[in-house]
Length: 88
Image (cartoon, rainbow, N blue to C red; front, side):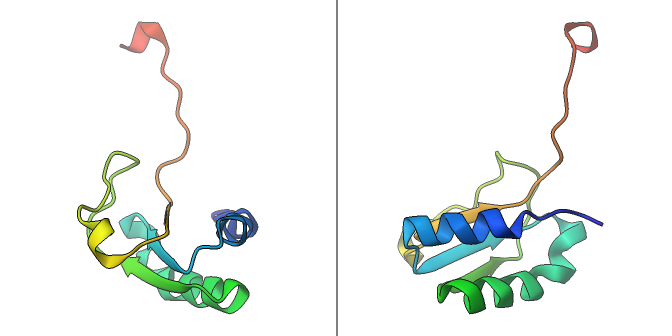
């Protein structure tokens, strides 16, 4: 139903040589979080942490990630949308 672009995520993790990855998904995709985490761990060897707090878009970043040693955060959010000047 949704293209989570997992191949791109795996590629980026490998490029960055990330050892600890945080994934953040909107509520509708949270039921798939463990499936996504397991796949990432299997394909990259990175430790994956799942953020189960809120995720209301790119501006909703978890606070305090430096304290847990995250190398890379992957956030799935809302689809691209376009507004015209008229709509503003």
